[in-house]
Length: 325
Image 1 (cartoon, rainbow, N blue to C red):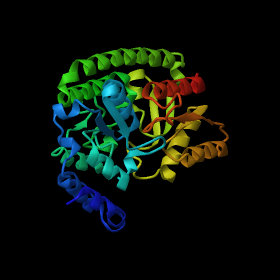
Image 2 (image 1 turned 120 degrees about the horizontal axis):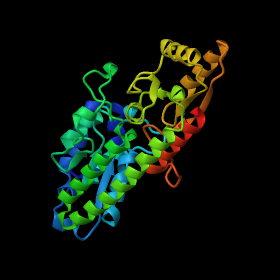
Image 3 (image 1 turned 90 degrees about the horizontal axis):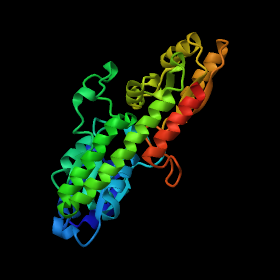
């Protein structure tokens, strides 16, 4: 079946099918393409750039840096997009079907899309960038029983492992340029080591008793664990269910009893629940402000300082430190 014909029927399919049917459709699209780019051989790739499709922006950023001028890296989820709630669109289906290689986070960050990526691995390289991280280093919060916290990029040292995984995957796909990928990955890893030191230094400026980070959802656990700052969140690891009255009360009790002066919104999570905490604390006679908006599950807009991974991390730690110290 011709892929173009299938894509023309996508609006109808998306309106009337379940997510399971969409997964089956995508697999059919990938398998029925007469010449799938994902089946390209190293010699085929010598005359053109590798087309990489990624889920979140932080991964797309790595792939472009490590891939250099050999790779075009495109992320499915842009600024302000919540990957926990993300659903594949018609355009996403087309991009995935045309990719030479697919990169995703894994650890259930992308919800049910994770199953789709595993199945697509039969037609093209499909890589979870977190798969080589030692499980002993991963968080397994009680409320997320049976699963690891996927927000590993907030421990910069763990994100270096993702950089190395990307380099390995590109080298396997395009061995002629393996040394180039390795060199760029090593250079970027050095930048991230410097970033790690910068973050640790800035957090150290906050008095120990003020190192309490209250956020909209539990995305900063690795940040708190690695950089010695207590993290409290309204919602859990996933944003699939919204915070309730009980969650707001729990956070208000912490804010008031510990006399916290600032809490933080997130760019990919609605701000109303954080605002509710501010109002509720005020009704208890305590003034707390929103110290700023942090980038958690998505980077900033392309072309802005926060539109790349390093800039995003620097923005977050500067915002947190300036508000808390």
